[in-house]
Amino acid sequence: MKRVLITRDIPESGIVMLQEKFEVVVNRKDIPMTKEEMIKEFPKYDGVLTALSDGIDSDVLAAAPNVKVFANYAVGFNNFDVETAKANNVAMTNTPDVLSDTTAETAWALLFAVSRRILEADKYVREGKWERFAHKLLLGQDVYEKTIGIVGAGRIGQRFAEKARGYHMRILYHNRERNLDFEKRFNATYVELDQLYSESDFISLHCPLTEDTKHLINEDAFKKMKFSSVIINTSRGPVIDEQALVNALKNNEIWGAGLDVYENEPEIHPELLKMTNVVLLPHLGSATSETREKMSQMAARNIIEVLEGREPINPVY
Image (cartoon, rainbow, N blue to C red):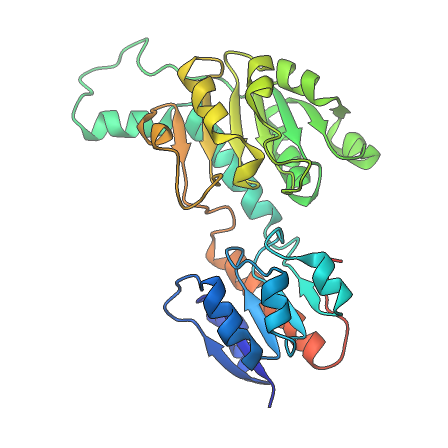
C-alpha cells in the first residue's frame, strides 16, 4: 500500500479521504518539520501533503526520490522549488479558488478595522475610559466612495474588487498583465504602480510572492502614498519591506496598516507590535471552518489523482 505523510494537522475530511486509499501518517503535533526532519522522513512516502511553511527545495527533493506528489495545503506555492520538481517529473499542487472569497473577506475585515479604529475603540471601552459620547472621539475614515488600489487581479483580487463595488469605490488596479475582463466586470482602471500609490486611499495587496514582487512595497513606494492612506496585506509578507513600513508609519507617511502576513513570520517587527494604527492577524486569511475543510479535501484529491496514475487537479506548473 502506498504511503502518504501529512506534515501538519489539517481538517479531518481530507485525512479520511486519504486513509480510505493509502497508509497515512499525520504530524498531530502540528509543529513545522525542520529541513533535516523532512530529508529524513520524506523518503518513506509516495506522497506528501505540505504546509506553506515547508520549504520543498532541491535538497529535499533529491532526498525523496519516491515522492510522486507534493500537495500544498495553501493557494501559494513559493515554498516549492517548482523547476527542480518539474525536471524530475514530481507533481506539485495547490488549493486555488476555494479560499478566494474567505481571504478577500479577511482583507476587508482588516480594512475596516484600521479605517474605523475598531481595535483601539474596543480597548478604550474595555479599559473603562468611555464616560460619555464625544464628537471627536476616535475619529476614523470613511470607506464609501473612496479610491481603492488593488495590486494583483487574480482570483482573490477579483473577489476583493467585487465587494468594493458595494461601497461605490473607484477601483484602480495593477497586475502583471492588463485584465480587460477585470476592468469590464468591476469598472476598474489599470494604472502603473506610481499612480496607484499616489491616488489610492486604500491599497490592498493580492499578488503572489516572486522575485519581482519581493519588497514591491518599499521606502520609495510609501513616499508616493497619501498621508491618509491605509495598506492591507493578505498576500505574502515579503511583498512589503517591513522596516520601510515601520518607518513610514512612524514618520506619518501613511495613516495605518492591516497585516495578516509578515516578512519573517511568525516573527513580527517589534515596532509594529507597539503601534495602535496597525491591526495584526496571525495569518488567518483562509481561516474559516468551511474553507479549511475544502482546502483539506482539495489537497487530498490532488494526491489521490497522482498516486492512482492520473493528472493532478491543481498543478502549479
